[in-house]
Length: 160
View 1: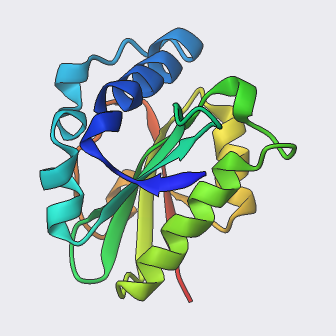
View 2: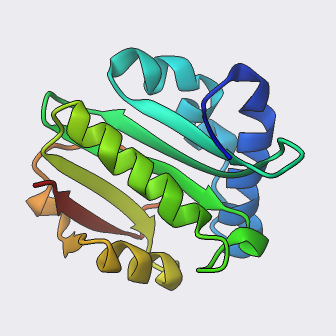
C-alpha cells in the first residue's frame, strides 16, 4: 500500500533512509545533513511537493519517495528508498512509488525532475535510466539545490 506522508511515519522513514544510506551504501550521511527529514511538512508539502511511503501489510514503512518543488516547472526527486528485501520486479514497490511521483508532478505542472544519487548506487542508476532519466553534469542543472552526498551523479527527466 502507498500512502501520503503522515507524521506517525516520521521515525520509520528516518530509520529506512539512514539504513540504506549508511548500512547498505556506507555513505556516512547524518540526519543533521538532511534537515528535510526532520520537517517533511515544510520542505515538501507546503511548497507544492509531496511525500509518499510504501507500507507492508502491517503498515510499517518499507519505502519512501518525495517530490521537492523548486520552481513552477522544476522539482527534485528526493528520499527515494526501499528496503532491500522489497526491491525488484517481484515487488515493484520502487516502480509504483516512482509512477505515483511522476503522475503527481505532471498534474502539478512540473516540466523537469532532477535528482542526485550516490555514485556507488549503481542499481539505482539503472532504474533511473530505464525510466527516462539522463545523466547531466552539475553545470547543466537548470537550478541549484543542496544534496548531502558530494560524490553524487546528477540526472534530469523532462516530462512530456
